[in-house]
Image (tube, rainbow, N blue to C red; front, side, top):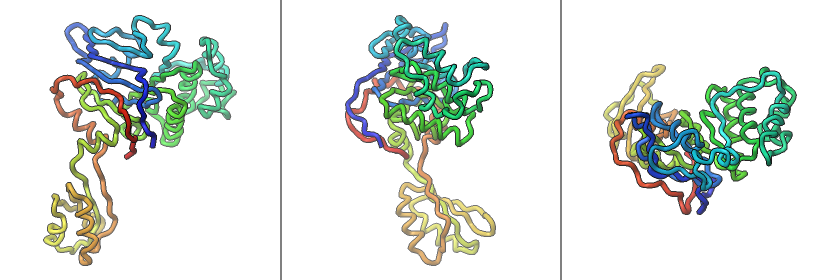
Length: 329
């Protein structure tokens, strides 16, 4: 766990509104991101994530409201912003004939205070591919090189758009480890993703955008706790079990059964999973096995919010937590 102490806000967004003609893509967004924080954006397509990020990196100017990055107006001061903020898009073109180290040396030459490209090769785990041409890299290796290109300028803030999209599980885990190491170095990471497992595993806080507004903002664990009042308890029992006995043990909660391999798979949705477990395990006639307890997840919340028509008024600015512990779920 990482303890979130009182920390400096390096990104401040207040009352952000962005219109394209009569279409309002962003409808009053407020939040802050602290130095060294991994801050996630999630939301359905069209929720406004890309527009908010483009305003943060200075590619678009807000219609209303303010955006400050390290105290700078990014749309008015693009050179200053790009000197401190690196962006890794989901896909980008590399020079096919350049090797990994040559690519990093090239991009290092664009920065006044660049990191040593040899060190960056090691940071992104491409030591063995150091002299491989970029066109011969696997998808995961190419994604690591793109991240290396973003890091070689020694940015204070890194913006990542769907960093692990399309990667196999091993490559994804490796990339997650690299992103987690940025936090340890004090680099602030702004992460846009549709992968709820990624957001849960990596982010200190997550902002869920729906219809151009922040529908929820907190740590993944707190978002799940606040939104999910029930858990699901599942277990397997012999096919000839007395259903009335099961129904009694399920209280409080609703019970459903299904036939699986000559046995009954029992599922109980309950607000008190511990009580249900005690009742089932302490009843010898039930002979339950293969227990599984499933609490709510960020994905459940994401799906629920995406189905709702978000009509609440814009939230107050989401300030940084003063003290507290970041928990994983």
